[in-house]
Picture 1 (cartoon, one colour):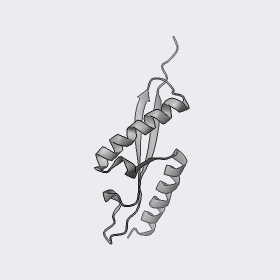
Picture 2: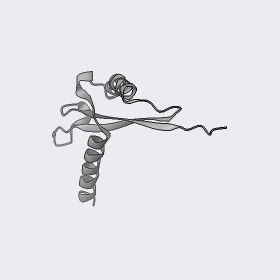
Picture 3: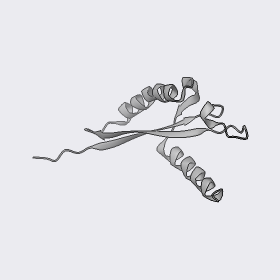
Picture 4: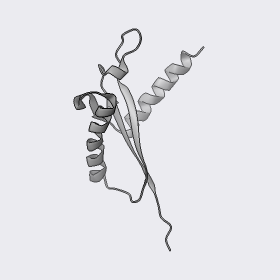
Length: 96
């Protein structure tokens, strides 16, 4: 019997500058990056299925952030990683 394979599907998003979550204490507006993960998917999906799912999840992200869907952009995993790494480096520099 073949063992079952499970896949984690990652869906990265950017909330554009001007969203309520991206306002710093000094009033500066920044984009916000977030990642939704669907763990233990039972089968791999093709690029078309992934793109369709990613697009449908935009509304969920908008609802969670209490923003209009136009504020939410589907982005690549590479863009997400690059921006999260930059943010984490900035946090380390500002640590006491």
